[in-house]
Amino acid sequence: MRIAVVGNGRTVHALVRGAALAARGHLVRLVTAGEVLDAPGLEVRTRPLPGNPVSAALSARGFLRDIWSFRPDVLHVHYAGNKLSTMALVSGVHPLVVTVMGGDVQPEQHLGGLARLEHRATRRLLEEADLILAKSEALRPQIAAFGPFESKVETVRWGVDPGLFHPRREEAEALRARLGLRADDRVVFSPRLLRPLYNIHLLLEAFPLLLAREPRALLLLSEHRADPGYRETLVARASRPDLAGRVRFVGRIEHRDMPAFYSLAEVSVNLPFSDGLPQSLFEAMACGTPSLLGRLPWYAEVVADGEHVLLCDLEAPRVADALVRLLADATLRRSLAEAGRRRVLEVACLPREAERVERFYERLLAAPRRRPAWAPRLLDGLTLALR
Image (cartoon, rainbow, N blue to C red; front, side, top):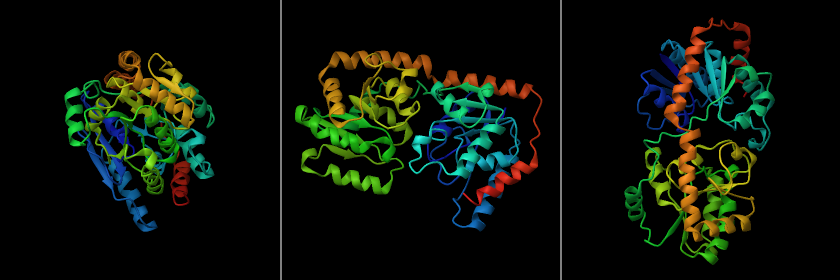
């Protein structure tokens, strides 16, 4: 099968999922724009990000050519709400599969509100899709807000490859030495982007309260795709005396190195004010790292408080209390680690999910092929210039 994947090459989501399908013997081409991370197993076609209307038109033409020349059996778009997705829609290729990931349909994640043209673009993609894959059951109501698409929605969590994400104690100790950490440093790891959505500032507010009770605690912050202004604010906060040099910014972490960071950490922390089912949660669970999560309703679909993870209210004292509890209770950490690893293998095992997606593709290919109307596609293309 020839599968054209459209997604952001600067994040691992589309790359990892495409590679899982390629591992099943399919030819997979990633079509995108801008920087692309390491993408083993994929054929990559990318164009420079446009800087003006002329370069945007040339980039769009090249993008469409990269899809058409591949002659895909299936076109699979990862994330329903950006210009890449609209250009994929303009290509007219069917079957068209869309994976909804969270921020593309969750309105609260758009701090300034979702612009009317952006809302229209997302609705159009979902409308034209032959199949919509939701990363969680909780996203179904958000998808329904865009239109009556329930009959073509399936839940696929994708998840993690247990061959990559598993406890790696030796690599963790090598990483400890490389980072210059002491043997008794108790690592708390934040794997999320340095962006306001993820409440990294809340974690920094909680950390002095933790240090007052556990002075050996040390916070490691990933810096992948950091918002520059937000990062500057966090660096200033981390330099204050009450954090006593116990916060380390560790730069962008390569995907292949993430298991070592999880294995080094005694706790992984996710505190966004809105979320779906984050990949970082699945990764931490697979590596046997206990997770502290904000008390958001979406997590209940796959994990239970006190059984697989620990939940807390999004308030600095509550975050600190939960971290103290986790670091003080080795039995709790061990229980969460063991139950979490079993759970992620049940509900979010990437090779098994890729096999399910393959069966969905086969079902679509056995059905009559759609011929999309050209007029709406033309309008979709014209709106790109206004977004």
